[in-house]
Image (tube, rainbow, N blue to C red):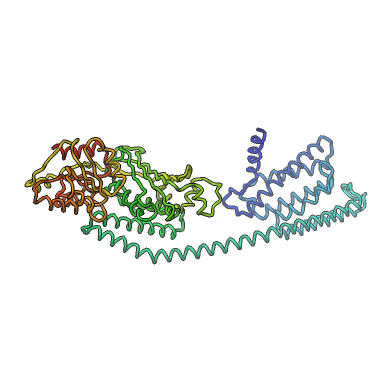
Length: 581
């Protein structure tokens, strides 16, 4: 308790003498003024105490010089701090200190230890006036005192209390201390000069490195801009969902490279650079699944899952490019710890954090099973003692990703424990108010010559063409027990083979699948049904439901569609409306 009280008191007292907060002072000037303040305060206290004791003892010869010196020190402290670095003030102060040492030596100071006090004069003089001037003043002082001691005792104004042997011994000790102080201060100056030279060299190397990065940035910026322009032009062409998604991945990576180069070329690189605005409607579910599918053939195999909370809206408006790049960076970082013999399992969970009118904040959690804390530290040269968030960000090399998230007002958190690594962060979006399920009346008119056979939902057999295991599990969970049977196929070709060999009452088809997508499969089914004149209803599962996409559904003969992600009531409503209408 006493330490907690004394420490702040000492720091408060020291802050009174410290002058470094004055912006006009260099480091050397600040050190000199601070040292002067401390010395003057100690010597003024000594002169005041000795003067008052002498006053009460009627020792006028000793009282007057000490009280006069006290007034001189008070005059120094009355000066503005900015004036204390001027040469005349330094000379005036050094004169006060010299006279004080002489007076202390003549009368022996408070305790009579004149010899002990006088040997500190060389250090004080060299600290205030520099090594050369301090040595000259120190030698002149000891020579003057020695000459004074040689005067006959009866003509000395203030008789010395030292014998000649004691005086000679004191002079020898004084000169030895002068040599030691001079050597120490000179060595200190040499070390400081070498450090300054090293710092200057490092500064020049850093400036050369920055210049190289700046020139490299200028050379690479044009090709990156050309990539972005080409992607923009290709997006205007008639591309399918998979092609547009691949282009968005390239665009996100190009934007990240451009931002990295821009930050590297800035003098104030610690200031985050804003991500280019690219707000547009998109399906978060499709974005996450497509991003994870990029790694499905290598690092993670098919061991990944996307789970959206039921209160997370289907359509979002926001920077889909930045969102995708954040996930690409995180998955690439995690992938560095995967091997062909040790695959990892990824689960992405999205929950609603808060919403204000159309503004919404979503919390993303990436759970990597199999990536233990021990495995992390075994792959990097880091001592396993620091489990801070910054340590994990550095370990995964996600500094730029953390800055991208920080620009949106949130923080990337990474933790490793219990046999898994979990990364969490939040991003802001806006809600897009669009209907999740729609029935295309144009498609019904186009198919009016067919005979539609409908069944009660509990008797219906469903064929689901979906390559995403997460969506299959959701459909199985939502429809199990509500329909007679559900058959799953990984792609359109497999679904078409099952459709030809069995009878189904409803087909759910994802529009983006390998081998054969949902639209190609729907065309094949409609071609086969021309001979029988019986129509099997088809519901498309899609992430993009704009006008152009709906027209493609109509031309393929699809009856309705539902957008991902969906909740149980939306799926049940779409299925029951088709089956029981």
